[in-house]
Image (tube, rainbow, N blue to C red; front, top):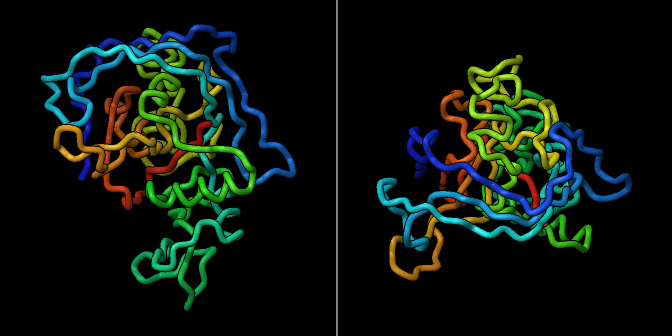
Length: 283
């Protein structure tokens, strides 16, 4: 189960107005603090407001023709400069924090792929043969991510979480009134997508931080891999709080360039895994 915002979204209002903005457009993110459990550098995202479109009843899914303009206040929060990497996730697996006995993530067509070995249940997400290390982790479900967050919170004695869908969109636009954080036209030099510049587009993910950051200092909010957020799709019943699926945002290396947009929304089941889907953490 998956769904997308329709592709005529270029005409929609795109406004994310921070109350304060003092970060240069292109910012290089610093490495994670030495001696700490794997976690990306956390950047301060200033408070502001997001002008977006949504269903009039937030407790259900609606037809795009029903969308209404909505202004959402955004409180100050922190967001990771980069997506969670294989190195960070593999540290969780090695420490026993990201185990699921029935996963077998690295098995494909009954072949065993490193770092898994024959005869053992594999706990490491499959990297598609692209390499691990500083590439964004993929093949992790929303449920898998909750295990990672629990482990990271226990290790750091802090409270990491997924961003909400509104927080993610606000951070992706980074104060821009244009369609993209850099302007109204898609710049193929700014991201990894199918049809974009570089050696990765339409082929595989790129190592995190391979493309310029936005005004907030965030890398790869668009393209590279899509990112799970905390917001869910509730049952189509008035007042229902039971989630059926969860949202993911941002497009990916496999998305055609016309399908990359900060307002594009996808969703799928909490157990869904894919080679184009990862996440970043918030606080």
